[in-house]
Image (cartoon, rainbow, N blue to C red):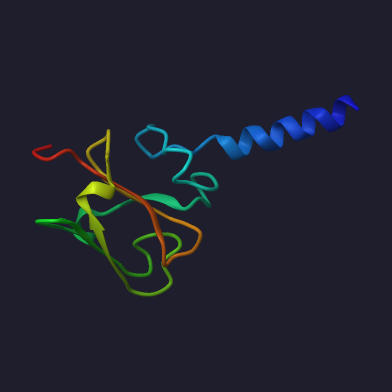
Length: 110
């Protein structure tokens, strides 16, 4: 019985915690699924991001994000952008590569 309860506790504990960005900050639990090796959140090159008046245009090609298998262009409104604590861009694709769950951008003027 204890073994079953311990296993259930570990399953719930791993589903609640988000993984970390390379710099060490933790992605919001809502944003990510998985870990640093197989998760859907990943730091992306600033070359893939173009700031716009109303938000950001993110163009991902295969290799720009571990889940991208083809070219994607995402238009992300400023209101849906999270502040990146490490000054880098990060994107979380979930439940598939066609859906942006969260986008992190550096504060303006960073």
